[in-house]
Structure formats: structure tokens, C-alpha cells
Amino acid sequence: MSRGLRADAERSVRAILEAAERVLADEPGASLEQIAEEAGLTRTTVHRRFANRQALVDALAVSAKQQLAEAIDEARPDAAPALVAMYRVTANVLRTKSAWRFTLGNPLADTSAATAIWADITARTHELLARAQREGVLDPAADLEWTRQVYYALLSEALHRPGRDQGADAQDPDALATLVIDTLLHGAGPRGSARAPDEA
Amino acid sequence: MSRGLRADAERSVRAILEAAERVLADEPGASLEQIAEEAGLTRTTVHRRFANRQALVDALAVSAKQQLAEAIDEARPDAAPALVAMYRVTANVLRTKSAWRFTLGNPLADTSAATAIWADITARTHELLARAQREGVLDPAADLEWTRQVYYALLSEALHRPGRDQGADAQDPDALATLVIDTLLHGAGPRGSARAPDEA
DNA sequence: CGGATCTGCTACATTGGTGTCACAGTTACT
DNA sequence: AGTAACTGTGACACCAATGTAGCAGATCCG
Image (cartoon, rainbow over all chains, first blue to last red; front, side):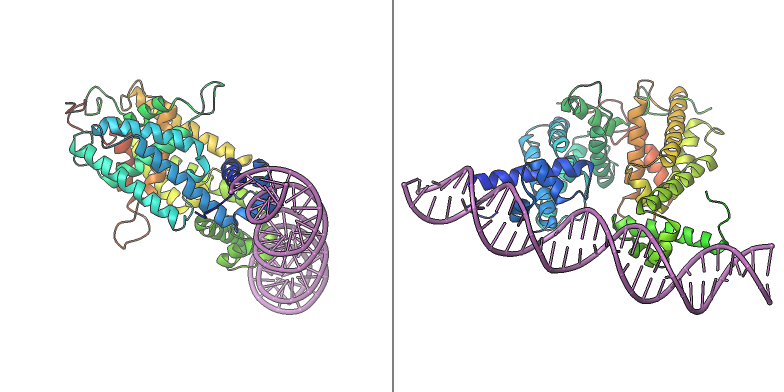
């Protein structure tokens, strides 16, 4: 944004954003002091880099959504059949989302820049789903808006799953992606036949 | 809870809870004064009925979760085949949830009583899903925990849908219930065959 | 009707977060 | 090495929300 930030200042900005993410993740409405402490800085410094609390939250939103957009880019969704693209995108998005659980989990009235990026992401998702529909991966009668909503919800839920064992914080993104796509396409009903078995 | 509240006092409590729901719905962290105003009362009165802000939020959580539990009861989930029961429960829950969007949408660290009710609801949901699995409505290999999570998420999403036309705030609960159950069981994939059609 | 309870009103004390400032010491860039 | 930029420290004013209290008037209930 602003040109000519010195190296250490830029480091501070990063530190603040990452700290804010961590702190706000389990306590939205936490004080700037808590964030500053988590970042290893002083509250004054936070105010130097971000005028308002709002400004900080906005910057956080922009940063996270940008990374999300990049994650989608890196999946090269147009360079493969829709089904494959969906897997790749899903895995990448899960990786990013797990690192930005707070910001990406709370669609709290984003301002200007953030909403623009978000609109872009939504549009591209919609596009991918439409292609999937054309390629027969989705039912021709499926409501794409609803499908997208469900897809987003599944992404969130996949990350809220109770972690297995003691291991790292997140589960394997590829396994989760499989779960998400599988659920999105088939639901939880019986697989063998298309109709419900016993109606008696 | 406390016995011997006078009639008007009890009315106030109700008014406060309902006002709190409405106000907090679109602005969590709203001041008690805003809530009081919305309830047609004074802030002082709010403090008389609820010592802390926390106490108010807790009471709100308990109230909402109780109503949710009642909504499930009224569906008589054990008095019908699992599939029918699921439809009935879903429709009832949607009705209740749409009236308590804030409280039931934010699982923010409920205390004591609220968590107990919630645990009960979760258990009963799980039970219903297990029966559905036995009756062949759900796939024998389905992960019930995951299925329950997805089910809850679908309920939320159904209420967050962009409202049709100008009509009332909520859509027809029965129609939404159909959508939720249908999505839960079949997903958005093609219905005709069990496998994806074109892989070439 | 009459006593108890509840509410509105006003005023006050307190607290926690926010935002600003000046100055001294440190760190980065050329 | 020297200058500009950055940070920590401590202090300050400010504001919104919270919580408490007393009193006068309205409301309920027996």
C-alpha cells in the first residue's frame, strides 16, 4: 500500500497481522494490547502502523482474502477437468483457511477492498461449479447458488472437525478435500442405489 | 428460575430477552442500552433483572436452546420412520432457529445450563441419525459425527439463503426442510447413476 | 383499598479500551 | 559514518459501557 516502508517496519506489520489472527481467533474483540503483546511489540507501535482498530481488521481481511485468492490461482482450476480442479482447489483452500481461521471465518462487514476480492473469489467459484455442471459432475438441475453455499459451509466444517489424536493442529488437507468433495457430490445417503431402500 | 416474580417483571424479562436477540443478531457486542431501548425499557431495569451482561447472554442461550429442544420434542422423532422423523424435526428446528438466529448461531462459550441442554440435543440428533443409518436412509459406512456436523451446517445455511422476492423474512420451513434433507442425503452430484458420467 | 413490588429517572463512580504525544535509544539504509 | 526511520517507555486525555444508588410514581396482587 504505502511506499517506502523500512524493512523492520514491514516486519512489524506482518507480525501484527499474524498476531491479530492468532489472538482474535479465540477471542474476537480482544484488545489491541493483547495483540501487541502476542506480536512482541508495544501497543503504541500497533497504533503507528494502523490508525484504527478497524483499519487493522480491514488489513487483516484483505491480507487473508488475497492469500485465499492466490491459493486458488496456484491450483490452476482451468487447467484440468472440473472434478480434478475441484479437488485441487479444495485442498489449497483448506490449507489457507486453516491458517486464517478467524478472518476467513467471520464475514463481518468487510470494507471496500476486501469485499472486492471476495466477490472475485465467489465469481470464480461459481464459474468452476458451472463448468462442473456442464461436465456432468454436478446434477443439471442443481441450484448453483445453493451448491456454492453448501460447498463453503463444508469447507468450514471440515476445519472445525475434532482433531484426531494428538498430532498437529490440522488434518491432512488432501484427505479433508476428499471428504468435502465426496460429501458435496453424494451426501450421506446410501451409495448402492439412487432411491431409498426400505419405505415400508 | 427464581420463584415469585411479579407479572409485569416477568413480562420485562421476556421483553429483554427478545430484544436482546433482535439487537445482538446484527450487532454482537451491542450495548445494554441499545437492548434496553429495543425492549422499551431502561438500562437500569435491565440491570435489575440481569446482574451481568454475561448473565443476560447466558439466559438468552438457555432460553433459545430450551425452545429448540421443545421444537424437537414436538416433532415426535420416535413416532415415525427415520426419514419422516428427519423431515419433521428439520422443519421444526428451522422454524425455531429463524427466530433465534443470534443465540443459536454463535456457540460462544456457553456456561453450565446451556451446554447441558445442547449436549442433550446433540445426543438426540445423533440417535436419530443412527436410527436412520440402521433403516438404510444413511449409508452404512457414513461417519455419523461428520454427518451431524454437515446436517447442522446445512440448517444454518438454509436460513442464510438470500430471501426470495419481497415476501416475509423467512422462507417456507417445509420447503427448506426438503432442501436440507435432500442435500444431506444426495449432495449435488448427478442423480441418475452412482458414478460420474464422463471421465475422458 | 393498601402494602409490596416494579419501573423510570437522575446522578455518580469505575473501569477498560482507544488514541496521542514527546523523548530517548535502537535499527536500517546509503 | 551519518542521517532518517523506527521502536519502547511513560504519561495523558477521552470516551463508552458498566454497575450502583436513591427516590418518586406506577403497577400488581391479595
